[in-house]
Length: 135
Image: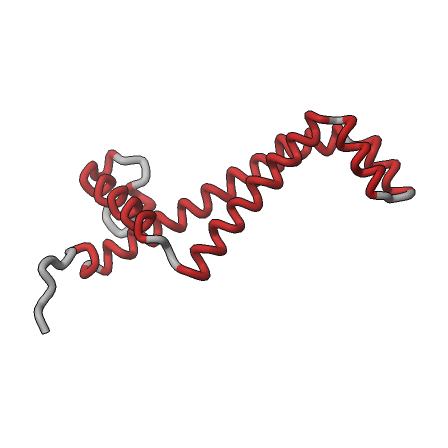
């Protein structure tokens, strides 16, 4: 058995791996905050634009009424589609990461970002979240 030619020191440092995990957690939280912000702005405005078709569909729902309501309000339809699309993309991205783990290119991107944050030090805006024990 031959030793490996190169051992990446970042794989051996548990503090570094913890910082990478914290950065990934922050990325996940950031994506969900964007989705929540979209629903609170564009989603609410889109639903407000569809208030009359929704009130009609509360009395008697048909798929034709839904299609007609969406066809008559293209801006609301685009807004809802955008909110639903962003929500689904974040759900699929996070599910993939949970089921299969982080892809190597994404892990390398996170590691490079942590190294840049450590290199810049306390002046970096993410320093206190990536290195909370360092004061």
